[in-house]
Each structure stands twice: as structure tokens, then as C-alpha cells.
Length: 621
Image 1 (cartoon, rainbow, N blue to C red):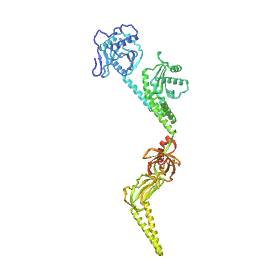
Image 2 (image 1 turned 180 degrees about the vertical axis):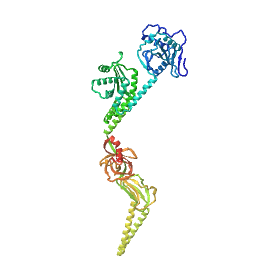
Image 3 (image 1 turned 135 degrees about the vertical axis):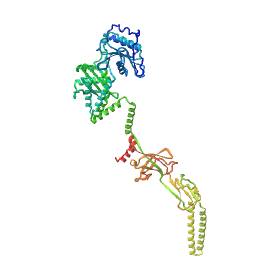
Image 4 (image 1 turned 60 degrees about the vertical axis):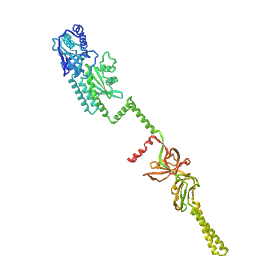
């Protein structure tokens, strides 16, 4: 029968003649007390199909102690203590009580057993956990236990007394742990906090001595002892206690002394210390922080041993206080020790097995950085350039006239003596004929005057003849100059005249501009920040915009001492001598880029020198 709202109900007794299998023989069995209760618990568990069955007893303080259980190796689950205590409190000798969490199909069945005629004996309860509640079996078992002999019920010999913590008792203990952690959190010095923790634990757990050891460089060093402000860390007792603490740290779990006879590992250090110091019982518990053991607590008593409940509470206190202690230990030292400790932890983490990928990446970055600082690298200065010619010829119009023919374009490469353009000579030819006739006329007049012995007329005629001859020479010179020819191998860099055929030109007007191709050089613009690196004789390579795939070498043969303003920056013009001959596709004025070799530098300097230079200029360092 189930309760609808609370999840708990009483199983009232009903008349029946049947008992679950095996329960009929329990009352008549003549076995000893221990075997008797073992059979009772086993029969109870098989009848109710329970996961775990316990025989519990209530103390004067109201807490429940476990006297025995079935199976012997059954492990407890989360929530067993609360469910067991609730069922045991409500159980009665005449009926079984079922308690279950809200919405659950399984719970705990409890039956109270009281000895006949014994009003002073503490109540005893049999509790089965995670049972689906077979009602008839629970009721019959309750009646059977009530009918058992009084000496059997009162003579239970517990195999393991384990306190079942009441919810209110657990809350009280958690509150005390919180208060202890708060008191330690108010401390500002490490040794004072460690000493306070040892004193608090000694009083709380009724210990003769509580010691705290801290892990330093792989060894446990005794740090604080309860009720002892100063102790000799080099004494034999301190050394043996540190060995016992190191034994607990090496196992990574709390250790108890004395050990059970069937313990798989013998605790030699604990045994040696306990015998030499006369310790009756001892417990050592490592304190972990972020998965690493940083300290060990050691508790000592003269007679009474330590149980699992004490270990659980001590474990909780250690987890609540260890981080504060670690923070105090790191900060409560002079800065040199703090730095050394931080460096040691960094080295341990770096050499440890964790974060392998990040460590390899960091090692690779450091290797690259060191290699770049030591590796020599050819350093080159980048600069823009223009192709220039040594000789530039301006070809003007030889006389006033008209353009008759243009034979070249801008960019044409011409040989020496090639006709560039021609002027119209028709008027000059007519003037030449007139000048020839005048010269002949005045010659004849001079001869007639000579024959007639007319000296004055003869001299006048000869003067006019000379005048006509000079004019004829001028006309013939103009006729010879009507065809403009290239004086040397060159390239036309200016003068697009084909669109001006027939246009008049005046004497002295610029017709074409020629650049000599045999004496080409580089005009390199070096920034003022890099010009100090360039020296006469420095070599380099250049490439022109038209063919960036072709590289040519050059040598620096002149550096202008005065800067020039180009595009809002100061540059120095450096002249470079081309090592190869003039290429047919080159044209004066072509632009490109050059790289001047100035020696080897470290790769790190090459990558960072511009940034460092900028920062020095900004911050004036």
C-alpha cells in the first residue's frame, strides 16, 4: 500500500499463514549471535529483493549507528543516509514503514525490533534499501522478529559500527566547516593560518597532535604542529613524521594506522613513527589543489581510531581551506622567493606532459626567434629608379619654312645620319636660281667695266657679284639643312610631328629631342633614412616596369650630396652604372625598382629595424 502525496506509507499487519522462503528457519536456528543476525539480514534482503540491508541502532544523541549489513561488501549510494534515517525514525515493532523519494517506485523498508521485557535497551531497526515493497513479506518479517527470543535481540554484536548521519547533524557539521574556512580566510600570514588550522582540528577531532606538511620540490616539509609554536625540523620525530606524510602523498589517498591484517600494502613509515612515538592511531590525508598534492595533514590519537565519517569531514575541511593556504604561502614571502617559485612552477609545467601542442608551438616560436636573431641575412635597400641618357640633343628648325615630311615617331631608335624630317625647299630652289642669275649678271658687268677701263663700275659690279654669291651660299646651306638627320645613334624621346605636316615652323623652334643610347645610366631615388647605408661601389639589381621578370646588375658610382623633394619626401639621387649593354627595348625615362646590397644583417634586425626606428623617432629614445 503506497501513500499518494508524501511517498511514505505504513504496511499494516494482516493475518497470513505463509512466510517468505528461509524466514521460518531463522527463529529455530541455534547459531551464534553474529550468524543469527547475518541470516536475518540475508533472509530480509532476499524476501524484499533489496540492494542493501542494514541493522542499525539509535544512540542517546539520536544518531543512527550501523551494526551490520548484507551483503558485507555492499557499497552505499548518494542519498542512502537521509532515506535510511527517515524510514528508521518512523518504523514501529508492529508494522513495517516504507519511505520513498517523490515519484520513485523504489524506496526503503524499515522494521523496528524491541527485546521482550527490556525497556532500557536502545531500539534496533532492520532497514532494506531500494526494495519494490512486497507488502506481505514485510509484515510477516515484522511479526517474526517480534516473536524472536529476547536474548537474541539484545545480544547483537556489531561487525562495523558506522554512524548514519542525520540531515540536521550533517547540516550542523557543514556549518562548522564553513565557519572554520571563514576564520582561516581572515588570516593574512601563512604560518599563522597553518597553526590555527592544526589547533582547530586537534580540538574538533580530539587528537593528541595534528601536523601540517607542505610539499616543496617533491618532498614534504613539516610546516605547523598543533599547540607547538616552534619545533625542531631536524629532530628524528620531525623527520619520521615527514616520511609518513610522504608515504601518504605517494599513495595519493588517506592512510590509517593501525592497518587491517589483510591490507595489500604495508605502511612502513607510519609503523616506524607510531612505534617510536607511542602513537595509538594515526591518519594521514593528502590535500590536493587542481589535481596536484600540495600538502598532507596528519592526525594522531593515543587510543581511539579514526572512522570513515572523520575522514569524510577532514576531507571536506581540507578542500575548503587548501586554496586559501596555498595563496597565503605564495604571497607571504619576499618578492625574490615569489619570483623563484613562479619560475619553478613555470619550468615544471613546461617540462611536464600537459599541453604538448602549445609547448611545441612555443618551442618552435623561440627557435625561430633565436634563429632569426643569429642567422645572417643579405639586407637590400629598395628604391625607385628611372633610366636616363648621358647626352640629350634638341633639334631645332634650321630656317623658317613648312614641314614637308616626318620620318620618325617618339620612341624610334635611329642610327647616325638617318633623316628625321624634311622641310619644304621649293621656295629655296627658286631663290637659288635667282641668286645664280644675279651672280652671273654682276660678273659680266664687272668684266665689261674692266674691259672699258671703268674702274668704279667694275668695283661696284664685283661687290654686287660677291653679295649675290653669299646669298647663293646661304640658300644652298638652307637647302642642305632642309633634311634633318640624326648626328649619332639615339632614340627619339620627344617630337610627335606627323600630325603637323605642312605646318609652318620658325627658325629655332624645337622639332625633335634625341637621347644618346650608348651612355645610359640609372637615376635611383634613395630615401633619406637609408642613404647612409649606400656606399660608392655598392652593387645591386634593377628591373623595369615593362619587364619585371628581367633583372640586371649595376654599380653605384655617384651619390648626390644634396637631397631632392619628391612626392613630399626627401630623397637622394644615386647614379648607377649598368653592367650590361644597352638593350633594344630600353627607352630613356623608363621607370622601375632597384635593390641595393649593403651587407648582411640578422633576420630579426631586417624585420624590425623600421619599427624600432619609428618608435625612436616618436618617443625620442
